Amino acid sequence: MSFEVPASVRPVRDAVHAFMTERVEPAEPVLDAGGEEAAALLRDLQREAKAEGLWALGHPREIGGGGLPFLDYVYVNEVQGRSEYGQIALGTFTLQDSLMLHRHSSGAQRDRFLKPLVQAEIYPSFAMTEPGISSSDPTQLATTATLAGGHWTIRGRKWFTTLADRAAYTTVMCRTEPEGTPPHLAFSMILVPTDTPGYTHVRDTPVLGLEGGHCEVVYDDVRVPEDHLLGPRGHGFVIAQERLGPGRIFHCMRFLGQAQRAFDLMCARLHDRTAFGEPLHRKQLMQQHVFDSYAEIQSSRLLTLHAAHRIDAGDQARVEIGVIKVAAARMLNHVIDRAIQVHGAEGLTPDTPLDRMYRHARAGRIFDGPDEVHVTSTARRILKEYGEGRTWEFGLR
Image 1 (cartoon, rainbow, N blue to C red):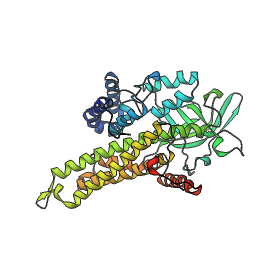
Image 2 (cartoon, rainbow, N blue to C red):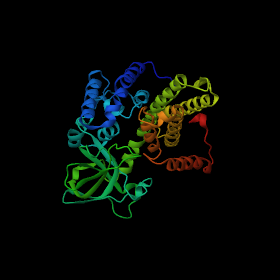
Image 3 (cartoon, rainbow, N blue to C red):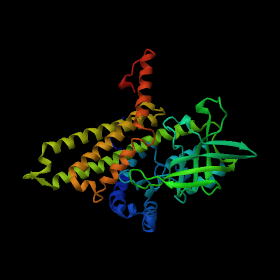
Image 4 (cartoon, rainbow, N blue to C red):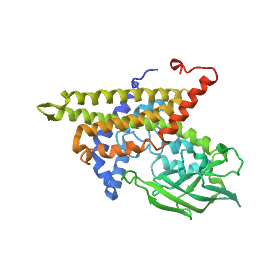
């Protein structure tokens, strides 16, 4: 495979890059502040993206998206990731949920949720993580749903349900099968409209001081019709794994977009400032920051593109995805940290985007599974090959 951006993708990638750097990034101070002005500005950006043919590029064309093939969209997602607002401004925040509904929803579910979802007329939310439970082992999840009289009754508490405070519905992972059922066949996904009685938004949980819509929600005898089940009963983990594989590719490519932005800021700063009689870019310790950042960004980029290539070829690529989730999140933390160091005191303030980027980057080592889980599962898969008399030949993967 080639790691170059394909010539066919360059025009749309360049257009998205221009949209991000010329419109989304300059809008960040207003968007960070929140409120009605931020909401209006975001709607303006969304209208502009639709008018310019940049809307929902990774969504299938048959559901109202741009129809970019998976591997082409990966390259676009890299530049879209430069800002945390890129996904919402360009209509791709809903991609994982839209693909999940596209593959598994019934006709009524598609009409109610999927069409408005792709057009950003409504927001989705996804509820898996629970307080007080090690959610890195999701077989421990305690939220239950029981079926009686044609309705599911859901009881439990979830948190880190992103945008539940403004979503039209939440996809809830809950135990639906009796004790003794194999753990990975005991859970289902159920679509719950957020205006259902018993669905109670408790709080927005700040993440390292940032309020980003990571909500805690109580399900107090929430009743929804039986047909709100998403996909087959007991297949919650199957659907979740299908959702998470490509999703982690997208996360890592956005990490690379953030790293590129931090790298740009760092290198520009090294040329703008002098200390002790010469420009900072001539200091060997500063050059070390550039070298280390380049090596880590490029390594993570090639690992991520390789994983995307495997996914595109029909492989589950679980080893490759486990590796990139850890490597890319660590890389992003390191690169932003160096950029802050180069900026000195200013890097600790909101005068640059680095302080906010740094906090989001740290959360990335926990979201979608902590590093430790991915390290362990990846090592076990590799070691299993040796335990069964095979080897792990890198050139053949």
